Amino acid sequence: MRGCGLAARGGRRRAFVAAAVLAGVLAGCSSPATDGDSGANAAADGGDLVGTSWTVQSIGGRPAIDSPQSMLIFQSTTLLVGDGGCNTFSGAIGIEGGRMLIGPLASTRRACDDAIMAQEAALLSALESVRSFQANEQVLLLFGPAGTQTVALSRTPAPL
Image (tube, rainbow, N blue to C red; front, side):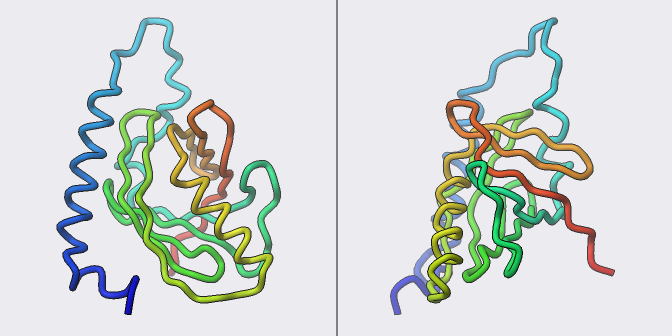
């Protein structure tokens, strides 16, 4: 079956290669901070996000569907997993200072209500366009290449 069994088809190797390429891209994009740099984008780094869960509040400025909710979980400094409301997804992530790159993302392929499927497609596209972020204890904002906010999320309490 196509799209299933990533590990059986060398998915781990591809994920490692994707993470290595992503790390190289981030390293090439780095620039030293200037004395006037406020550090607003560096409110959190990859280590600060590890183990945190976030609920999508808006995508491209449009409120997210309340039920089912779309979620993101930062499994590690290199792996993002989530639920788009219908399908689960995962992919490589690279974070350095206030910069963030996500993808490529792989997802399951279940069919759901048209509105949920449209939102999920918009979410996955927005996530793969992320280039920077701002975070605090309760809010995570993701920004695209032009600095436009693409996704707003609120922190989800850790399960008991």
